Length: 192
Length: 192
Image 1 (cartoon, rainbow over the protein chains, first blue to last red):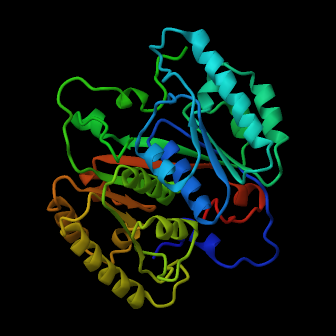
Image 2: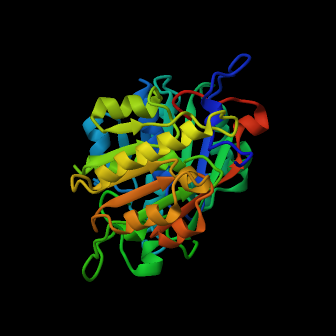
């Protein structure tokens, strides 16, 4: 038997002493799969507890209708995509930046509305990584948020200032990928 | 601008040439958060596409009623926990093993029923890691499964044979954790 417990199990046990409540700043980063997927999993978990959840997506375009969007619609979990599907091939960086700024404004209103328990900022690291918004302004807003609000930020290249400010940071690392290894492209239900 | 695209984005684009369909064996491992959470996120995504999904849990006890269980119940996604909450402190290894064997039998029936598109085997790596079931038998069954069935396995210590057999492997790495760094214990909606 290993001396280590299965993942996080002990934390599900009744705890001794008062349970400290704090809205966490959670970052899922790295080049592996599962960053957005885990954020949706947490949204589902919180939704299951009757918590108020909203997802703002910074890259996916408003027309996005992947499995997670369809599921969210069916269960009444608000997901707001407002991006232009930015990639390194994007041809209109000014539009990309303008959309990011607009979406940040909307996310901020949600963040300070007092009407949320969990706010997901999906693929938000790119906004910071590419400098579409000043990191100092973003971090100040996050620091000022209602103290019990959990914020989940996903995306590659989480900047050091964001990691420093975060409570929980996980790096998803690609070990093996079917596209790279076997030429199998993304499949519905698995990756979108 | 970086030369790398935001995570997986390109894969969401229309692809050239035929899209190869294959049931993937997906492993979420590592000591970080998000392994089970991402599996539930994928279950939600697949459910959103009308796919048939079931979750078998190998550590959580049948009484488990965390946020993800409540959400699954509300949306009609079958989640079957059958463990004894095993940790390294568990006192009855024979019972732990017997439950794992029983649960594997159930999961196998589901796997070969032809009635599923996605099967999640949550915290199943421990069954292999601790030798409750012979890896050769498990891997043979997985290899024989219906060719379009996606199987998602989560847990720490994914054994090398499992990684070798898998199509997609992600390691969730702990970068920063609120319990370790600030003494903040697991909170409802976030971690359970």
